[in-house]
Image 1 (spheres, one colour):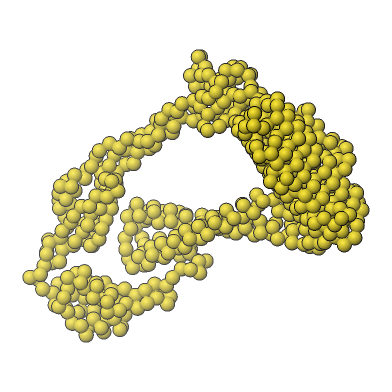
Image 2: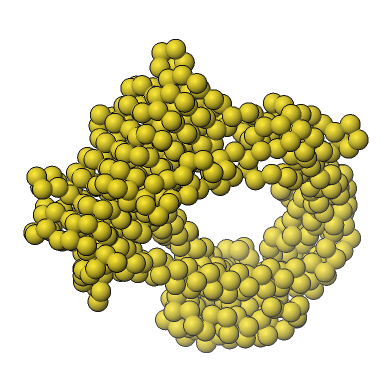
Length: 558
């Protein structure tokens, strides 16, 4: 960190240390300064450094114009620009009749939170005094947060410029009340797979039950804020510190003994939806889902004892359990999808699960599961996508036709058929990893842009320090923060670059995927792991496929 100091060299040293390994630090351009003495007007031309650009005629004219010097020896100005000696060079006579007194004006910005003093220094006339500054501030009504050190520096240097002379005190925002939930809003439900490949649908723990009187949510009180003041001395109210309502939904009640507690009014399933807590019993459909019931859209879990007819949609925020057959329907669940029978999708039916899908069979169906797809009998002509695994290990355990993609593994009794039906099985990278890499690339580009801006800012500060500019303690503090941000961004980019390489390496060199056919795999099946693919030419029994030395290899399934 840069400490408060009056010696510019100390700041320069720290900046040079911070930017020592930055190839992007630019050189320093030459500059022109004008000074007025009793015997005339002088210019000082500073040469460039590190490949910077020399000061030119425009720079000299701009500096002279700023001092309102219009009658000067052009040849001497050109000589000074050519020599770049860094010492004062006489270029004009002083004209006392053009002398003027110092002038100031006050500009208030940032909705009254900042006041700037714009200084026009004296040219041979009366210098700037504290009385002049105080009068200007009083006339503008600036009374709060006046920076005495800034005023002292202005009076000492008598330099033209725009100075932050007063800052208001911003309010400290309060913290609104928060809600602490006393139940898991994403309950897990994983079916048990038996050794023979069958799935036990009896002990699924699908519903997260609550009893009447259970605490569902607690409100934590708000924290009040602190008011601030602007430069006019006016009070600014803080935001935040507000109370919030308990998220009372269906079948919930506020405790009579403690108004900050939300209780279950009756026993059932606790569900968080649309910002409120509800308690629902399980939605049970005793008949088929057809024109008698219409589509099902429920905020909890759904149990259907009948079948689901073609064209209908079942959507649940929890799990879906269907005990009858499913036709060309759409089944969507944020949790598990459990089919006691199976689904014949007719190439239009689909299942989308936030967790896993378990069924007796799947045929002509599109299935996407964030975790696993587990089928006891057969998968026929389907399009499958599983974040973790696809398994069909029952008595038949067939995977025939279509495409099966899994993040980690595919297991089946048999893959493909004697008829050579086109079947593709692929394992590799979980889709979550690809999404993570895309987000990381976007953040990486943003950090690089920020880093470049900070480097340019530090280079500008370094240039001003070497030119002899005196910084206020507040400016020194901002420079310290800029240096800290420089290091922080450098570290972040380094870490992100490492993470990018790790993810890219996972995607391009996946070696963990496995494809297993415990009985046999038929000719015509396309096997893919990572970047490596193989089309099976001959029937193979009891085989597993994996990557070894970056090549697709095979071995025994057990």
